Amino acid sequence: MTTVSRAPAPLVRGYEVVIGIETHAQLSTRSKIFSGSSTAFGAAPNTQASAVDLALPGTLPVANRGAVERAIRLGLAVGATIAPLSIFARKNYFYPDLPKGYQISQYETPVVQGGAVEFFVGGVAHRVNLTRAHLEEDAGKSIHGIARGEGGQSRAPHGAPLDYAGDWTGVDLNRAGTPLLEIVTEPEMRSSAQAVEYAKALHALVVWLDICDGNMQEGSFRCDANVSVRRPGAPFGIRREIKNLNSFRFMQQAIDYEVQWQIDLLEDGGQVRQATVLFDPEHGETRAMRSKEDAHDYRYFPDPDLPPLAISVEWIERVKDAMPELPREMATRFQRDYSLAAYDASMMTQSKAFAAAFEAAARSSGQPKLVANWMMGEVSRRMNASGLETMPLPATQLAAMVSRIADGTISNSAARQVLDALCNGEGESVDAIIDAKGLRQLRDTGELERIVDEVIAAHPKSVEEFRAGKDKAFNALVGQAMKATKGHADPAQLNALLRARLA
Image 1 (cartoon, rainbow, N blue to C red):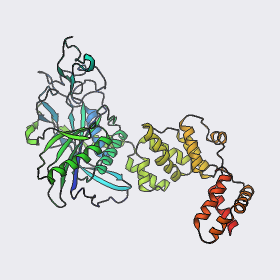
Image 2 (image 1 turned 180 degrees about the horizontal axis):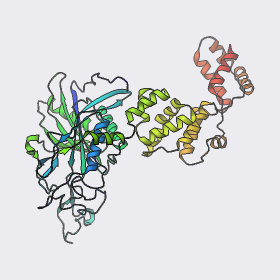
Image 3 (image 1 turned 60 degrees about the vertical axis):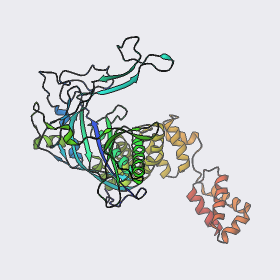
């Protein structure tokens, strides 16, 4: 990666923004972190909560080896220290969806310590250091509703009496005990844009490592943003934590709103108080949920039912040997083997499928830079517009199209029409689409010379203006020549012929 930027972010109304992110990544194990209960999404409420998940008398938790290995994978990928001995602790608090009255987590000695995540913001490289990543179990889920909606239609929970008419809260304990890896950054981000790009990079990494499916709608990857503001050089301000952000767009909106809210409060002479807030996307604002607890409020102590987690050097080496090529390593290889710029190489490694498509198309066409340009531009634009996570066309078709651009068969404008046809399934052969739509560039020198001579003869005023030093007149002549060829002329060839004739 290129040199990491340390330039300060622009101030917001004279204040520096300070952001740290805590991310809960649900690990991709088939069973829970301390029991054999299924982690499958979408089951009927309370059908996947065992006696161990509820800590009923006589039950004992047993750590899930697969969850530990996924934590090791993340630690190796971010260059962190894997603790040879880490401790599971009880985090005590009371909430309806936490039947134990405590959550098993890690506090003083997490399994992953340190590390960093690198990413780009507007083409500039950034690096955010991690404090820790620790294993823990998820709590259950409280579902709030109103029994009767418009028209009197019942919205009572399943099993409620038919005449039930009050507001209700249901508790689903299927998530209780689901394995999580909580990844915590240092407070080093200075804008919502940096926070979003960090979150995107981390999301891509955990999916790449196959430790989390990254499904934000199902809650598999959710972020909490700790936001504060301060005058430049002043101590850190009081932070407020925006909980459960499950989309990158909402994250940026929530942070931007929270920053303005805190500055308005301080400018009016108020004082920010530590709190947990939620983002309301419908109204685009954050709302206080509860006062924020500090670590001592949770009364952490080592879980007496779980021994210390011992991770040997041999175990770490086995996990390392089974890991895929990491995105940063692949990006470095793309820079070396395909002469890509650091930013372009990073964009090509945003997912395994994207990287594989780039490499296949680059090798087939022999045009890696052109392939990268089209994947970052028109292909990505279509993916974003359609909400696609995979390429809308095979790498072989992209390579064939890029080859026809490189050899002058079609122009960039014509290539966009070919790409549309390929994405819409209008054909599989690039050459057949080019011929069917009449997109081949006119490259016959004799024919182009004839057209150039006709344009020069028909527009003597533009010729005079060009010879008088007006470049716009030349562009006008090119436009007339392109019009005469119905846009099929090779622009570079046409320009060269026209300049030669005018000389």
